[in-house]
Length: 118
Image 1 (tube, helix red, strand yellow):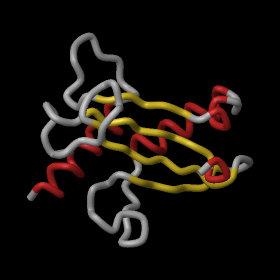
Image 2 (cartoon, helix red, strand yellow; image 1 turned 45 degrees about the vertical axis):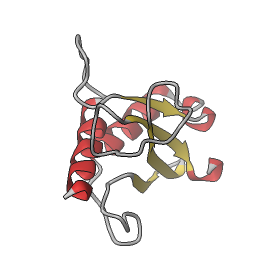
Image 3 (tube, one colour; image 1 turned 180 degrees about the vertical axis):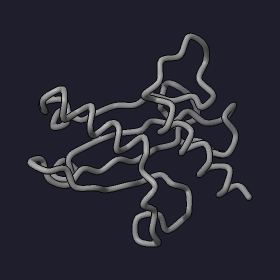
Image 4 (cartoon, one colour; image 1 turned 90 degrees about the horizontal axis):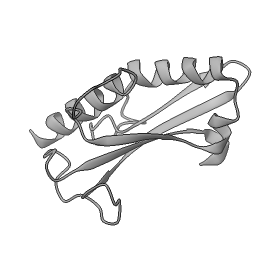
């Protein structure tokens, strides 16, 4: 049951980070990009963010725990792109979360990176 909740929250974070919000987000977290992604043209970055937000190609290989916390895809002219979600206890990101299924105990960080930066 917790795995299903975690996957749903991760999907919600990814689907919603692209949308403006005037209040607290339903899933607390940040989205960060590595320097390799930031160095790409803005149009390419926007395309990558769109793919991450809609990603649903989960397999046993890229999602062995069923939490929808990692994905990989190819971008023409760029190569392989990875995204991953890490779980922290709060915004300070000092300690890992003990319960990623509980939004009051988990702050997520979604990192988007070139595979070569992993």
